[in-house]
Image (cartoon, rainbow, N blue to C red):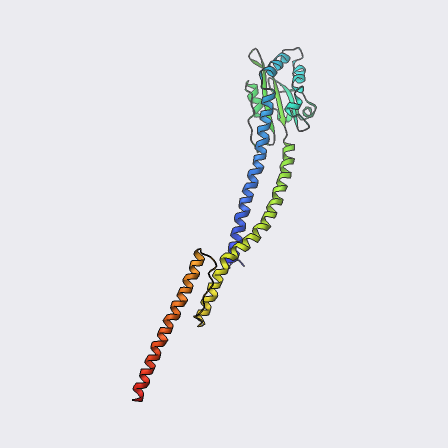
Length: 264
């Protein structure tokens, strides 16, 4: 099936188009994950990592019931932080142990114990390191008193919302790829035909020349390399026709001379 040039060209073009579409689809899906990660980081930084809010959190941490007071301060910014059923916050102690937090996070508090960003916050460094391939997004901010870490404000996103959106986006990309594949097959058939049809004409012309039809001229359908090949074929056919006519003429002369010689 794939021995013909036509089918080989179709296969090459289809594979090329599918490969390009797959790379573009992967790039777009990865870009969605990167966008949400950067958006999460900027939301937390722009909301909590500011002078006024940090001062409020430090004052709350100095209160007798510091964890609850700090919880109330963070909860006041739930809209800016995008807190919902997928994203929650926790108040941890200096050793990274769960103290309190939003309702969505209480049950799963131990699941993120001693994550890399929490360890960085335990050392006094706010951290939001992560990548698109991680199963969660998190941000840990240390709240210090007198130069020592007193509490850690930990924002955690389980990426479930992003996963759902990515799944929908992936479905859309797959549908687009299937549609594009059908279009690619049709276009590749048309494109390959423009290449193989002149070559098929030249092949048929060569067969006719082999059968003795030397007066044919193939139509030149383009000015590219195939058109030049067709023109060269026509020139060869004319030259061969002229040469054979000349040979036939000489042969006729010789036959006439032999006849005269024989008759005399």
